[in-house]
Image (tube, rainbow, N blue to C red):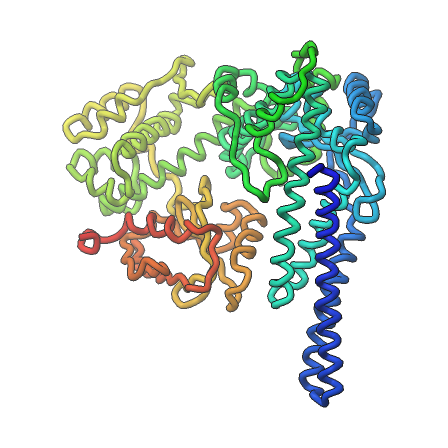
Length: 613
């Protein structure tokens, strides 16, 4: 079946969705009239009200979609005077695709390139056309690969593509809006079944159109370049995610941010410094996962399809893609200043940013150990000397049990403690690196290896040697140690969520983190629990959510008695003597099917030994 026929079938199914909805409304209206004529006024009134509600829901949904005018994504606009070489390439590619060039080009902060159009009449009438270019993508592709990507995007607007494609896209929006308006009733449930058929067919249309657009990529850039561009997309996406997670997240949570020039500039430096690792990622097989609901074929399928397309000989332009934009660094900084909401964070250059944020994040981890050592030692607070005393006194197993560590985890934590103590003592600092993790360096700027000290601190018989070495380099173990008395959610990652859990008898949504749980009071009804938790997570970071609601860190738990595993019921006793009861309900929704299990696994670490036996 050709793409045009598939798209036509999709359009017919879209029309059928509203034909079915209209038939239901008419049928229910007729039934209401019959009930009224049969002197069943009460039933007629109820049925008429229900029919009117459904009709209004359908009309409102269509009105919302028809009037929707999404504003162009924010970002600096590049005029032909700003980037003549880029505009020349775009116009050339548009001509090759048999379509008109975009009306404007905008920079975006994503690993993405796209062409969109402000259409009317559900996509049947064209309008202003926009080309969006993600700065991180420009920093990872070369010019030849960028031409391939742009050819693909413009190919969606070529004469070979039917205008039923935009209709299908807007039709999806209309159907989703209609289902949202009719959620919670039997008509909405019935129409949802019909919608699934439409989504499957429209996804197949989209996948076929992606392969057709790939043909233009191969014709413009050559098969090898087009395939390399496809392979580069997951690499660029992974590199960008790595950059955000490993270089930005800790600083951001601690109240710091890079400068506008450093935000994208740092990613460019990372890409340059990690060429070997990126090359290894390119050698991996492209992603092959795909479902019938996906709008794009897998990259593996697209690369394989290109092998069957006619090849052309095209010299690949290996200049970096950003070379097409004069003053690229300034443009990227302008974008960062425009779209990155700093919210009062202190902006620092990368060297100072890394040193500052690492000290703060590592101190938070160190404080977990110090608070645990204080409990084991029976003290209010602890310092590095307290931890060494606990190990020297043969109580390492107690410390590990309180921390919930096993294997080499305590060794890693002790190395963190001694390195952090060296920074606290002013004899060391963290040196930023794009090619690897930050390095701990001494006053002579040489790498300071404290792993042997941490190893010595693990055994009672060698703790004295560890103390001596620390004193030798200038670390006073009695004056370096705990800073914070209470745990925070900094650095926490969301593992799952359970809606409508009874916490001490009151319903809460429970967000499960790797370091604790956030307890959020909820409405009495169990409906829409998953959507409620997703909305909650989108409203702010885990640090913000923990500050608004109750945060219970796992380290606060002394014992956890598992009453029932499914649905989960547990009675927690905290170190300060307070108790917390958790009761998952059968009707409560979860973020995913493993959410309850992940919480159970965390709580089992605090189960008393007699219960485990």
